[in-house]
Length: 143
Image (cartoon, rainbow, N blue to C red):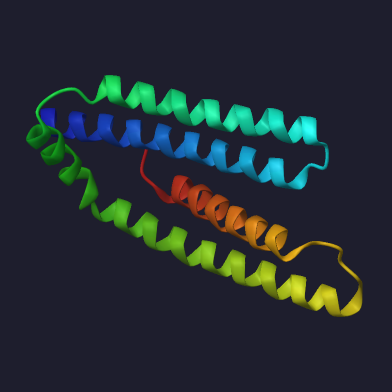
């Protein structure tokens, strides 16, 4: 029983590292949208793409072995009650963050002129939702 718990804890730790990396990538991509300079935007975009490629290469090196064994190990973590509760909280808070941001943007646009194109508002809203989901998931997920 102790061996299964250690293995599950290792899987959770590895997945948490992946979630942290996803959070960094989302924040880097959101920063590329918010910055005005083309040079800074290109550098941050290259950084984000480099992170994604590095993660892909590292995950392919780490995931060697029979597919059934890997699937069985991930099934243990997938149906974890604490993880499901963390996902539920994260979805709820991400939804309210996006809803609040859009409502406040609409209220602010009636009072003052906001010179943002619709694509920028949509992209920043998606980045806010993804960031809120990942941050709340990391807060509520077990360590």
